[in-house]
Length: 381
Image 1 (spheres, rainbow, N blue to C red):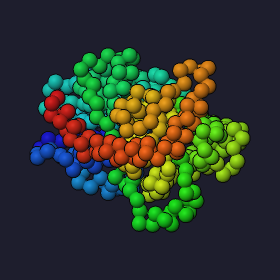
Image 2: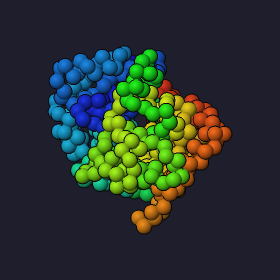
Image 3: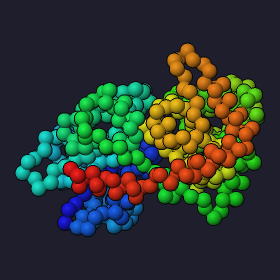
Image 4: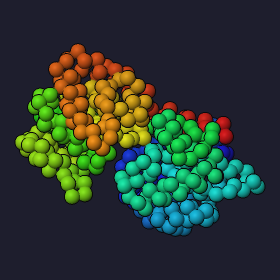
C-alpha cells in the first residue's frame, strides 16, 4: 500500500478561510481519487481529542490522522528549523509551506515532499500578511528551494513572480483550485435574500478595505455618475485597521443605502448573494489565484476585475478587465472601474455575453481535477 500523507494544520486554529477551504476540498478529493493501492493519511499538530475526531468526520475515507507531539506554533518553528518530529517521512503533500523540509534520508523507501505557495505577497506586499508571517513564508520558501521535490503554485503568474525571488528550476507545477462544493443555492434562498435585504439590482464584491484589495477605489467608483446609482454590497469584514468600508463611502459622499458591508457570509448566504447580483467586481491589484471571480463565474455573473496577471490568467477572456493603478500617484482607478461598471449596466448584450462566458469558464475548475493532478505529480516524481 502506498500512502500519501497530507498536512492538515490549516484545518485547525485560526487559519485564513481560503487556506482552510483549499486544504479540506483538496484532501477530500485526494481521498476520493486515490489510485488503486494508495490511501491518504493526515498529519496534524497536537490538537485536542474532540478536534481530531471532528477532522476525521470532515474527511470521510481518510485512513488515519497522525497527531504530532507539539502544538501548531511549535510545529511551524520546528519544521522551519529542520527538526524531525517523527511520523513525517514518506510521500507527503502540504497544501501550504508547512512541511518537514530538510535533507532527505536516502535509506527511506519513499521520501518525497511537495509544498504549495499560493501567492508572492510575502515578497511584494508583506504588510498584508504581517511581518512575522511574511518572514516565516520567505524562510520556508528558501527551505523549499533546497529540499522540496516539487512546488505547486495556483497560476503561471505566481510561478513567474516567484522566479524573480527564488530559482526552483523545473520543480514548479501549476495546479489551481476551484469553488467550494458547499457553494450552491440552498432551498431557502428567498428567505435568505430577504434576511440579507438584497436589493433588486446591485454590484457585489468580496474583501476588506485593505489597500491591495482595491475596495476603497471601488467604493469611490460607485460614487461616480458612470455607476448609474447602483448599490454596492460587500462580503467580508467591514473594518480594516482604523477604517471601515462605510466610512470610505461616507467620505465619498454616498448615502447610507449605497454601500453596505454584509460581513462574513456562510456558503449558503454567499451563494444567494452571488446568484442575485447584477454584476461582480473584484478590484484587487495583487492576487495569486483570485477564487472570488471563479465563484462568480459559477453563478454566471458578469465579472469586472483588475489586470493583475493572475486574475487575467484565471479569467481567460471571460471578463471585463480594468487597468490597475500604474503608480501610487495614479488616482484614475476609480474612474476606470466606474466606466466598466457603466458599460456592463448599460449594455444588456455585453452583460449577457459575459454571463455566458463566465458559465463556460467555470467548468474549467474542479477540485477532482486538481487532486488527480497532485496524484500524477507524485507518480511522476
